[in-house]
Length: 244
Image 1 (cartoon, rainbow, N blue to C red):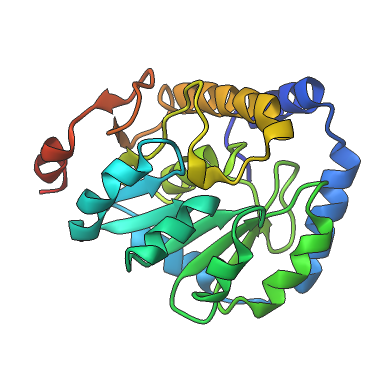
Image 2 (image 1 turned 30 degrees about the horizontal axis):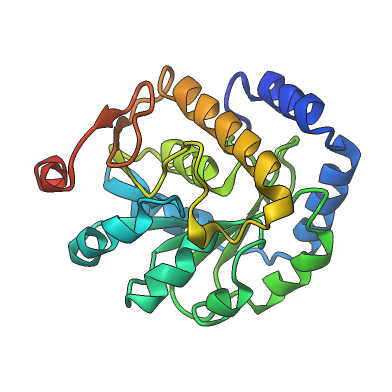
């Protein structure tokens, strides 16, 4: 089951970035063959449904958010390359959303913990999917039609896909940290210089998807980062009033 309206947006992504739906499907099939039958879906639902959660990206404002994140007692959903800085500050997220482009060394430190990995399959990461065999708690996602053990919650980049995941599992409130979607790329994102222009285009697309999600979600949406249409901009001090 896909979020209503996703097929149209996926078609736009394929066209804009010249991606191959065939390769995306191939990757999803490989991931499906690796994943084990488990009850991780139920575990995520228990963590998220009806709760206030935060989604953590690797934008420029992440370093400023660390102090606040250390003291937050709510479920943390971390996008890919934000994990490295979180672990350096002894913050272990409950959920990691990744296409395995981040710091695998950081992932190795938590693959055997209670942390749930939501691994995304796409045409460019087929060779990296073997790593999933090392993960204790894992579900798989795709941008194409879901099947078998593969889900599709919507979303494009790891960051906005994490927000779509929280929406899918019925989070009451979603608060963004380090999700800037501006013209600067955070130093924690591990983006190579040659990939900068494409990365900025991806961020722009991710932001537009979140703006669309804000019009159809039942979750209350907040951001401590740069303004996003449909998300209420709040300060770190205001976070405490949101989670009580």
